[in-house]
Amino acid sequence: MGKSVCASAGSAYAGVDVGSRELVLALRIGDSAQDCGSFTNDKEGINDLAKLLKALKRPVFACMEATGSYFLQPATKLASEKGISVMVSNPYKIKSYARATNHRSKTDKVDARVIALFAQRERFIEWHPPSENMM
Image (cartoon, rainbow, N blue to C red; front, side, top):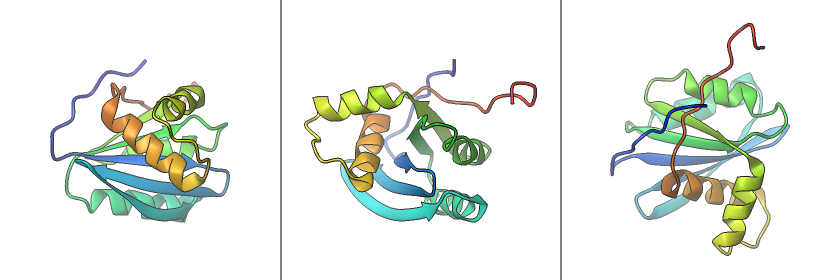
């Protein structure tokens, strides 16, 4: 289990909707939210995602669902970057949170926005990649 992490007022919260081929990003900074596009779920796309988050020049708290094994590469890459903390959440938790906050639409963009809101408002539990032996 990871440790709980505290964020400051100037932090950015990234919601990443993970698919087998695509990562959809939404950001929340304060009360503002924005869709930030999508990236391929491969080495190049994951590197582009990490560059974008690092370019924010502020602490970033990135959250994604544990979607099969598709989350593992992006979560591992982001967790290795200085200034980016990663939380990997149970998909059922995010689904329940969406229902509780009246988010009825089911698109990748909406999911990414809900994940970012979840990261901002709920207790952020930092995820760390498994050891080589565990892999």
